[in-house]
Image (cartoon, rainbow, N blue to C red; front, top):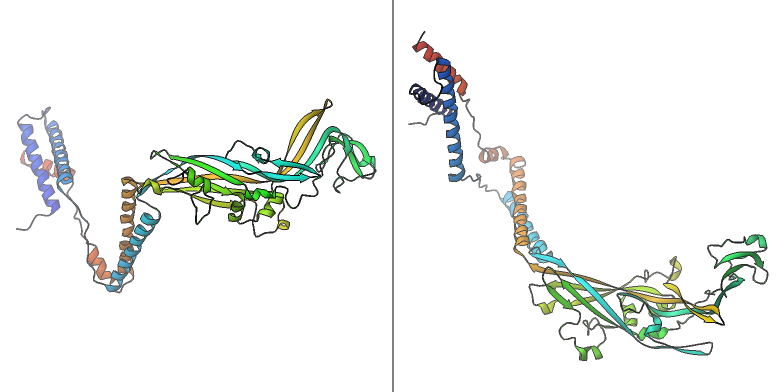
Length: 450
């Protein structure tokens, strides 16, 4: 026996529900059933209630006891099959090669918190105008607290016995004058060294100023550098880091780097890559610059301590790597092509002589060292692993989309594939509940006339 159409079954079901409700009303099971109009209203209410109960029961039953799966069509086409497998192979290579191997998508990460302690060692000797002097760490390191950023003096210009008085400007061609009118009293020039008194000194053809006199003369920089022996100074770096998310603490004094090793080692990227003692000349050379050139006018070097730790492996494999970068400029460019060459600053030492305040001014050329610590630790975690796998599975759908576009739009038998992939049906119009209610009312009036 063939099954009834859905619209006919629904109509019969509604009629049955109506008959049950009319029977219920006649038996007095529905309230307020007096009168024909009240009876019809209660009958409609019973039908709606019964239908809602049926819909809710059917929806819950479908939700808990049914499973839906998409329909798939097996297409035997060599070209489309090859395209599909190539795309899937590319997606698989991306997931394994890039996501998991290169990007470590199965691990969670944490950034290190680190501190740096430094210590310089070395002694220099100079003889200037017959005056001998020995320079130790307290003399040539600024500041001397042992932080991650400091300056090592390699050259200097010293001006002794300066006092607060009047003197002519430096005859360097920037502050020339021909008469007093060129030196406005109380003003100063950007290239000058003090306030002008309004007088033009005939011997120097420069304006007279009130300043620390005599004025510093830095037109000639000592060459070779006065502290050229600084090339053999040594720098000791002690670095400690912690990864708070993983509770791991490490130091650059790793396993095997003990006191006996430190006493005899000197950093070498090939032979002693873990030695924490560095020769200043090697630091500049590894950064791509020449020591004698940088020591003369100063410069800046960046030391990068990099920690890349895979905590899924042994902790002993979490070791630092040192990198050296010149912040002085481009080593391949000459000094003439740079607007400002080198690194320098001034400092003064004040003292009293015959109740007169005096100072010794030093223009210091030095090598600035900036130590930067970068640490990154990785460790397996199920959440990023599942996320990476889920995204990879989703990307596999690209192959299906591309192949469907080819089958449905480009191949000669595209209409045949459309009919195989999509199932077309026509839904018949269902009889509304209101229409059934009216038909039953007319039938009731015919059978029971007034």
